[in-house]
Amino acid sequence: MRYKIIGDNLQMVLVELEPGETIYAEAGALNHMSGNVRLNATVRGGFIQGIMRKIAGESFFLTEFTAEGGPGVVAFSGTVPGKITALKLDGTIEYYVQRGGFLAATDGVTVKPGIARRLGAALFGGEGLIMEKVSGVGTVFVHAAGDFLEYDLKPGQVLKVDTGQLVAFDASVDYDIERVGGIRSILFAGEGLFLATLRGPGKVILQSMNIQALAAELARYIPRGGSSGFQLTFGD
Picture 1 (cartoon, helix red, strand yellow):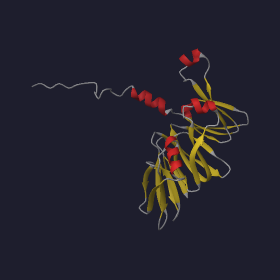
Picture 2 (tube, one colour):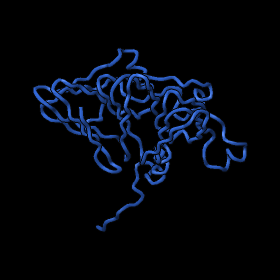
Picture 3 (cartoon, helix red, strand yellow):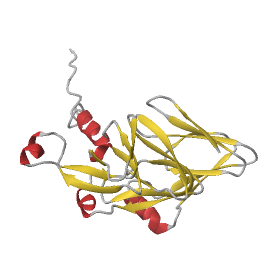
Picture 4 (cartoon, one colour):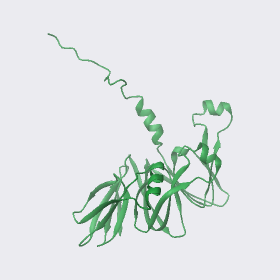
């Protein structure tokens, strides 16, 4: 398999499949494909993992794409303006990915729900108790809002992040949620009540845009009650 990530802040990933090669993706991620690519909806991992994926913010079904009779092309794109990155897995590295961050993966990669390891993360994390855990051998494509920023944390090095900006982190990174400051900070800092605390070693990937904050901002400009906010009056 070969791939190319195309675009700037409205990216898609173009994947070239060899005959018989398969890649699978989140339902609705398809942008386009060549005529000799066969698609098949499947519940990878069985019914229970399908239910857990649904809880984790993904679809119950995943879609498999297989090239038949020759090389094929299939392209995937995210659902928000932003970037796509490829995570390489060699069987020794696992990542936790934010809810809704999984886009597509090669056949040797397993995507399943992952449980936050700390009570604080379980109770207060903006991304909830269940994230997505990717493992195996191959390539997984992750999409997020805005631009990416990556940190390679050294052992014991700490990074504190708004939970809405966290895209993915290496399974070797310790993850928890901590309260921000005192009452004054909570009321006036404008950063929410809790921050994600990540302690190295391992890679951490952040996004520049918080989707929840963007949705809240856009909601201010959407007319309420079905009215457009103005009315035209015509004479008799």
